[in-house]
Image (cartoon, rainbow over all chains, first blue to last red; front, side, top):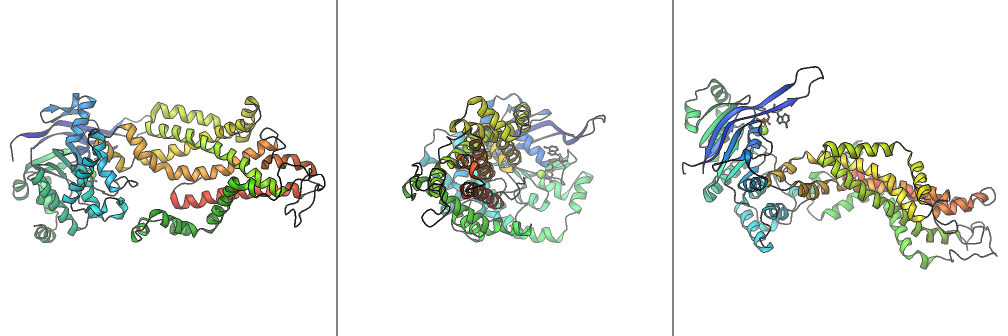
Length: 273
Length: 297
Ligand SMILES: Nc1ncnc2c1ncn2[C@@H]1O[C@H](COP(=O)(O)OP(=O)(O)OP(=O)(O)O)[C@@H](O)[C@H]1O
Ligand SMILES: [Mg+2]
């Protein structure tokens, strides 16, 4: 694991306006209220916090799905704020998302084969059709989906399989950074560990960097190198996994840790190894 | 209501039964009796449209003054008209005119309306406002009056009937497709595509549009019924098909003078218009329950 920084967020902010009456003062949800962090190449940063604290918004700010109100995002040494449209397209290629709901995030009327080819069609206009097919088959195979399923539709798969397909789609452009927003939250516990282990294996093989968003501390502990704790739009603590779990500094982190039932995570930790 | 829910294809049903989607669709569709019967009836009309002129028992255009205004009998099932022409033969021959006029009109209206609705819903903002306000203005006219007005400007004739009927179906298609687009636009897979780097145009055409197709198909089917009625009305008013042609509306128009003396020559063209419109509406209803359970009128 190198010490080079892949992506850095500097004091990023995002406020969403709340609908108010005509004569009232304008109000905002401070979804992300000035947070700074970086992720090193090949590392996994876990982002935890309770529902509504701004984890997903942080993820969407990083890959530019929504623009930041202020602050800057630096990817591979380049500030994304003043990137041109073409440069953005290149970054998109290097930064992919995995979503919580693998069913809703796959186009329902497209075959698996076409869903996976889509990113290649967008970014590699000159790649031959055969080459694309080969890349799709190889990657699906790596993600544990047999090539016999290529002509099926998303509804024909189980939740775990769909998430594997979602992961394969995110990897097909050979990105550097994967932003995974609760990628296993919708899955059964037994399948969660399979998918997490797949993500770990793929990380080693392709030297991927992860931003792993989850509200489930045991999942985050399993996969992360470092962990950031968010609380109402602020990043209250960020440290190595060991620090956070053994020696939490911030009161909110302590509360969060004490609120996981002790029995279950132990059983689950065993299951995941 | 509960009936509607159980008849809708659920994801579970699709999953348990892994064969062809279309076969499955067809199997569920056949269980909806009114829609299925309507479908067969429409299929029958289509076959008549193609082979009609070759199977009519009599010539649909040639007058026969030896058998004027005969009531229905074994040799003339629907009777004959004031020129002695077999009404059944005329109805079969007329399927071509009446159906193709309304299909052309609705297809034209659906294409233009859907494109406008898709653009309106997807781009939003000023474009949306402009398109929707224009539609509102068109909605303010009663449909038939609008159609009459257009034919009055363009002049009578089938081509202009097509344009007029298409014109008044544009705003309703635009509105319905816009609604569907707004809904699809918020779905997660659209965001997923965006994060992959797909262009707005690509997302609109390749991902959003296909999702609105079921809505368009349902609405298209229902609109064919309306269009048949509108085209018949225009012909009835003498603004559409040539009065002597076997167009269903024109037949009604010419025969109305005989309504007191020879009821059958009004009755059968009227009946076929009624049944055809009903069939398209029932088929549309059935398709809606299957394809688009959320859509309400
Ligand atoms: N597009 C938006 N418009 C308005 N408000 C938004 C929008 N997206 C998020 N918010 C608000 O911003 C806050 C943070 O939302 P966010 O989705 O980032 O939380 P989260 O930490 O991911 O929560 P969860 O664990 O439930 O996914 C919430 O209060 C949410 O209601
Ligand atoms: Mg979230």
